[in-house]
Structures are given as C-alpha cells and as structure tokens.
Length: 181
Image (cartoon, rainbow, N blue to C red; front, side):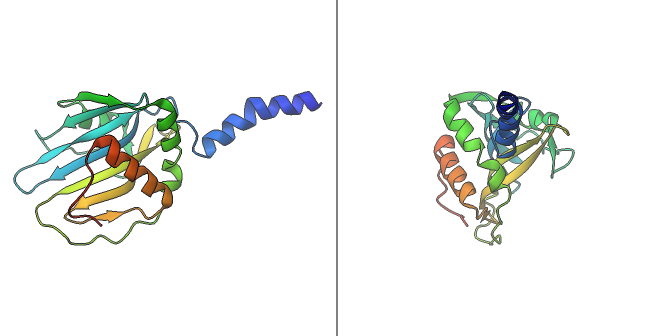
C-alpha cells in the first residue's frame, strides 16, 4: 500500500501541482514573453521582440498594416503568428533553466494590481512588456501586462512582475529611460 501511495504522488500529484503552481510552460504554448512598441502618431508603426518556448529571442516589424487580433483579452496562436511573421529575425537565445524560472513567475504576476496610467508624453506611442498565460483547454493566450512606457505609462505592481520586467529590459536590450510609470 505504501508503494502504491508513493507511486501516485510521483506519477500524478507532483506533475499536476508543478503545473498548477506555474511550472514549466505547456509544450503546447509557443510564445512566452513579448515587448512591443506601437505608435500611430506619424502613420502606423509596430515592432518588437518576443521569446518562444525554446528560449529563442526574435525581433519583428509589423508596420505594414494595423494588427487586429480576433479578441484583445484572449489571443489565439494564429493572432500571434500573424503579428510576428513580418520581418522576423532570430537575435539570441536564453538558457532553458533561466526561461523556466522566469516563466513560473507569469501566473502570480497575472494576479498583480496595475498602477494608474499617467499622461507623461505625447506622440511617443506605447512600449509594452507582456507575459503570456496559455489555456491548454482553449488554446488561447492571456496577455499579462508587466510594464508599459510611452504616452500613458503604467506597471504591474506585483513583485513577480518587477522581477520579470527588469529581466526583460536586459533580454530585449531596451531599458526604458523616458515616459515611465
């Protein structure tokens, strides 16, 4: 009986609890983090960088036409593929152990309170740092706002979000200096 209980814990309970506590990304989840800059001041401009489940860091430029996801609260894989498909270039990679550690913080960051947006700049657009939560049952991505600079800056006030956006500043190489919350 003792071996049966131990087997249950090892085979069933540990993997379930690990995932529930924000463990490794689902193998179905392709996209984990993103920085995007959007500006409509002098025509449409949208570019940024993203990190996939393999630790690849890509930059993209989708400035040919406004990106219109099917739903802004929950994104599909097709929505994100459309956004990232233009002028897509691999720029670096991240060690899997670091990526797994950081991705585990996305779920608790998703519970964080968001600061009030402030009017600080004009025509700067928005630079948005995002983590993604993935619903295996729905196949949809829920964006988690971590930090936003630009015309209306705001930030996620959770400790986990602070760790994530400071890490992403380094990964994406774009430490915000102006128009910050």
